[in-house]
Image 1: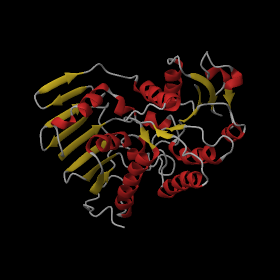
Image 2: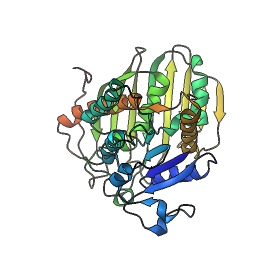
Image 3: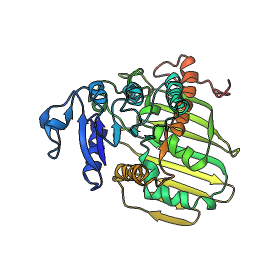
Image 4: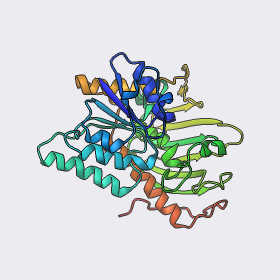
Length: 347
């Protein structure tokens, strides 16, 4: 199966490595105008290096999967181009998170898919990369979820460090327009995992603060209050301002039957009631996502861990609802927004 990777930054390189390690996948193209021939992997010929994305799509390349691994604000225009340029349109796509940034972009992707269906075409297979779903610890927790039951309470804390060097390395990071904020760039993974395990949820309040990053345009810390369809409630506390280095990631779940904890920077420690599980640190989960997509495309084998575009759009909508409310309170960097915001999902 031939794959093209758009964007050869940190994440794009991970995708390329995963493709090369899978004997059923071929890295056919790398598209990136900001690299040189010397940057290409040894296995990739210079003739497979493409600089202009629009020209590439318009040339109708013979590929089976397009991976979009570019900065956040570029996801939508690149998706729109690939989904509406014929005869390329219809090619399966894997987009990095967040699939888009804005609510109008959500609507436009819906409209593109609906237009295809109305014209008698198949919906474009559009996946979002959420590799945490493929961790062995998460798979075990999902398998044993009946021991937890219906969610009553969830407490999630993600305490990461992002220093100035991280933001200086890419000028789009930490910007309002291009990154969108840490919920889009870092912690959307954890919101997705809460939804994947616990079911549908709504945002019921929150607050933000900037402790350390006065050189960015967005907050570095926040708290979100959540309500689940089960009637339970939860909270996620997130930060990129942990001193010195990233400290911990933890999920605490309490249902009507039992409790569980998923913890460790790599989410490799799991507790379910009285049972304890320790898993090897797994950095191969990108490859697992790609293999599941290959099985779907080639053999029509469905993997419930895969995240499709509709589900991913819901998470984007939740984040936008949260940000609209906290940002409308004119949060000043370095000062707490003391408003506890309710009724996020009205209208």
